[in-house]
Length: 265
Ligand SMILES: O=C(O)CCC(=O)C(=O)O
Image (cartoon, rainbow, N blue to C red; front, side, top):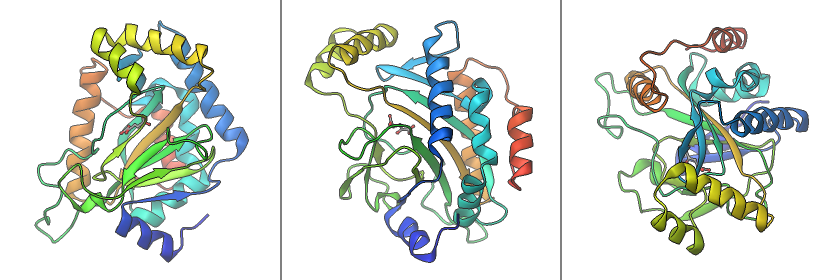
């Protein structure tokens, strides 16, 4: 699966693209199953945040996700977007029923500047939303073109109606949001400030109203340059803090899969 020039231009101009049918239904099912299994077991090192659950450095914690990095379509998309020397950014997340606010995912000192050799920011995320969002706006929502702006609240709002198996690739600097809390959720969040008990309340609320679970898997990659290196350094520090871990080394199976797919890390 190759991206064509129009798709690459769209990514550069708008800051995002949806690529349809990257994963098969069986692959989507596997990602969903291993993620749900992980988050259903409270003895796992789950991070309770934004009224839901997440796991950073998910490739390490959830072995069943690792096949993504040797998937032929995924590897080809990474190379088409960031060139043959594309680097895995040592960042991966699995999210479960999170509510969020508008944010950008870049943390560099100045990600809109030019580097000493004229290089520019070229780091991306690939996101898989593992349920159908064609008729709702609970998947990813972005502000079109906001990757070139430092401001968070500028740019036309676009709901990405992804379907299971679709990949969303976006420039990490784009302003984006998952599902915003509704009125009831805002009140609960205000009254109850404990993230774990919030997650439990919202889980019951979802079940009561038949709201399907929302599960997604994200990982980062980029052109090998100073911006991507800075992102990697900061993201590892952030992941270590979130996971209360002293150090980081890439897990051996993830490294092997990347190598098999001809990807650098
Ligand atoms: O909850 C979501 O769907 C959005 C997650 C997100 O924005 C992120 O991981 O940066």
